[in-house]
Length: 468
Image 1: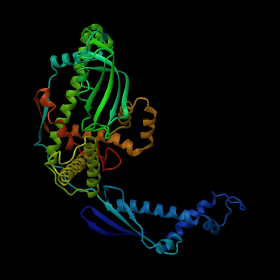
Image 2: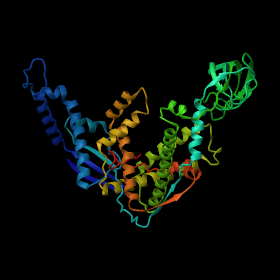
Image 3: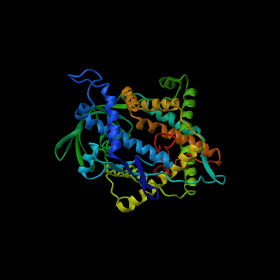
Image 4: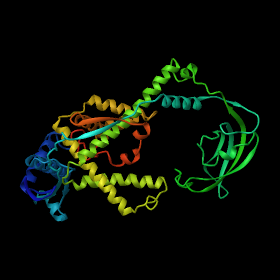
């Protein structure tokens, strides 16, 4: 096998690999000799099938294996001999001439093919001793706990039948049939549906028109589906509902006491308050972590500028852009609605993709230098948490991840990334800053757009092509 480098431009490499016909012949004969002791053919004793006959029967299929093995061997040789770190899988290009390929498959001509590679960039890790990041910290107030308690009490209080007209806060039991342009539509019919007036859980305007109705009343309710309604065929459409009120119910007394706590599996109201406080604190801590991570990644991003593998950027951009287009469709929005154009939006999201890839490569190298590992136990625990998100489908989800190494790598990657972030935070100055809940959660949507790196997988997973 002869391997010659034909291109070295930036992060792109190309190699020409040639397997002489004599070598193809030898490899084919070696494979057939091995096959001879295993194959069973009518008319021949085990191990006595002539190699020539085997070649006539199995020659092409065995040669296909020979070629595939040669390609794999060439890839390994190129990577090892040149000490390369690949950004993606090698791209193999065989000759366009069918005659040339046919001769090679018969071992009557040389087999030549091209291996195109994209390698990861080499860069030095920056000094981070001067980095300072802010960690916003919000305390859980009694008012926050009480607000959650009241919300839980409202959601679980009882309703009792009442005489008279329905008022705001009451609950009505209704049957309805919906029509658009006089025709019933799928999902527009309901029986014994409980509607809490003022809850804003139905189409805007629907609940308002039920106020003042009594049991036995009927009404034609006219509404318009929101422009961003999830069902595209209903979004923005005018609709009419024939509604029949079957019962009117008044809310029972709002009780926040030990008895209510027991309904939630707690020993007492104080225990329930403690559980609520702990849950809110976990939310606050998670948001604080997102903020400090965002600040840290911004600081790291400012310290690096190096060439990025085009394929990784394109892969990341495609994923981001697909999500953007999906969100736009589901919300019935256009780029004009967002005050921009598709071209401007693409340019902005490509910058985001570049940032994610760059930061991912930086985190991957930091993790490698720090010898950060993710244990199988950690992956298993994270997988269990993922499986729990699919009640009733636990077995299928578990088997899916066990049978798909790439999917399992998607579980491992964020664990690796978070460990690397912890490692970096231990080396920089972290300044805690007391903030309100509102400040803690401000600008959350904008920050989620471009903060997360997406290529920190060199040590956390199998490839360096993706991250979290």
